[in-house]
Image (cartoon, rainbow, N blue to C red; front, side, top):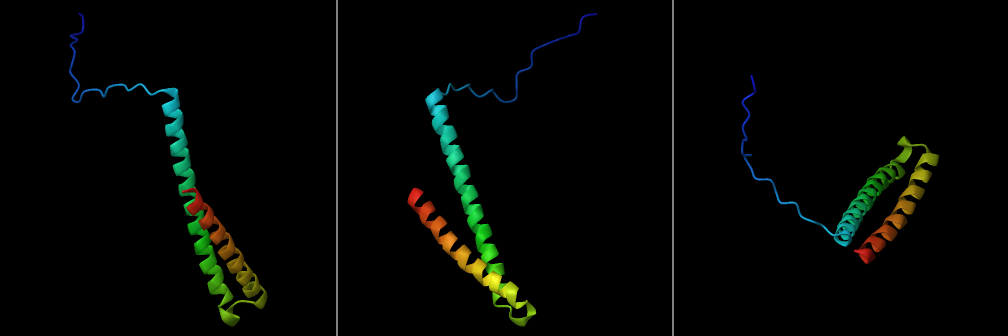
Length: 95
């Protein structure tokens, strides 16, 4: 006995296939890559800000922390502040 086969219309029509030129695809992918890179840099800047705050808390933590650790934490705060300012300037200039 042959199976009873019949065509069933889909619930939703298939979207039309759009032909994207190579140039358009390259521009789209470049824009996506740049957006991903910008997001990644912003995440780095957020991480640096959090690390700077932790270091500042340790640097100002008084005798709870050994003097050498407080000193290193102060250096980290200064270094991250300068590097964050540089990143901010580059991001603003390239946006």
